[in-house]
Length: 159
Image (cartoon, rainbow, N blue to C red; front, side, top):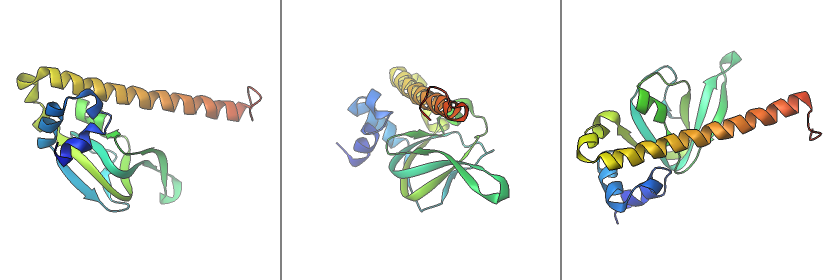
């Protein structure tokens, strides 16, 4: 097994792919080494790329009053980034910045789309993994919102 295969197999996406599919997938992308604070995705831009954190962390940020940045979430090893823009081609709603040295595997939609004809089962598994990742993120965000609401309203005697 090559080094790239191990990178993808250890991700949310790699859990749904066979070793052969992982090898094919990694051949279509590139690895980017990032420095602390370096921007991967800018809010308001379109990049049509799917990213997988393979080392380090990415902060999902939005601008705050006074020119500061607020971190909404931190993406860790194996998690996906830019998946919604990869699927729908719309502008990103947050900026992603490296937290310390970070490595990211990236693939453009243009490199991925031809697999629909040559390997539709793999495309299905990739898309299912992306949706699963989005669903897990939504579930976490909903739980955080409930906890914040409970904190603010002092419900359930926990605060």
